[in-house]
Length: 422
View (cartoon, rainbow, N blue to C red):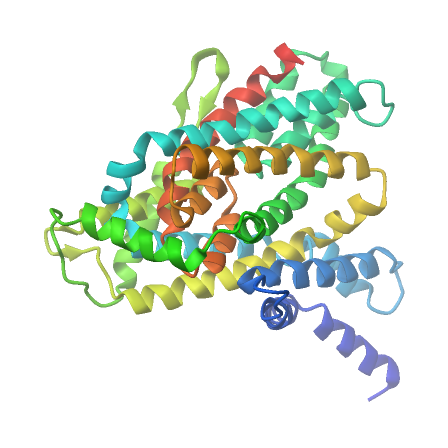
């Protein structure tokens, strides 16, 4: 075999999507085991190893010219975004349906105790984030030649990791600019979203992991107290025996969830609202698991098997997130998007911090469930993964599922109103 053939084969292997995913997982889990005091990233380490590998892969691919060795591999990397978006969607759905089925049985008890407070948390985070984005626009961006109102609303949607808000902003801009300026305005919104989205992912993952340490929360004590709360609240609820893991039931629940997620709810002059496929799947899984049984179909399954399934989905999802957005993260911090990236940090971090103080100090919500509600307020599945990893409990999922729909609704409304209040 010629040297050129060996190099071509090596390049093909090193840029293979499956190779990169598994390498990001291995390095990420290794990174996640590193402890600084009592702090560790756990499964969230996959995001950061993925960011490094994703940046290296795309930076290399962008430098390969047509006709050079490895051009076909480089073109494939650029076309797919390092790894296909199908991996992103599939592993997210696998994670959400399995974790929803695992914890749904306890959601009734949680709602009895915290119900309305989740609504407040879910709406509070987008509202505060929008307020911070508006302050940044008027104090910093308004006189900047590089960043304007369109990049700002895109940055807000990205910091909230909210695709519905991004889509709403693209629709709303058509009402405020002439047709010949629409393409430029839409590109500016997309730029803000692209820069801020991975920053939003990183901020919520780090904050969920760091907040207990910063505020001296004893996670083990919170977990014990929360389990006691659940036992007290669930004494009158019907107990059902867990059945074996049933992929037919999981498929049915996921399919119903996708249908739910695609239901468009009209909001009059504010456009329309939907949960999206991922949000619909989580809501479907929580509801069916809570119901427990319909006729011969048992929706309560072996907890250990569901645990393995959601850990698999979460581990792969974290790595794929990092790989897909690694180049954007590093490029934004090194290039012209630095202003937007810094603003995105403040937009999300301030909202999360205030929501934490209100939730934990004012509402007295146990950190185990509050961590999930905060991730839901940021509509961030990686944030939920970080909450599960940091607390050593699956229960944050119920808080996430309760807060997320209201956060999505608030994001859509705020994105619609932005051009009227900017």
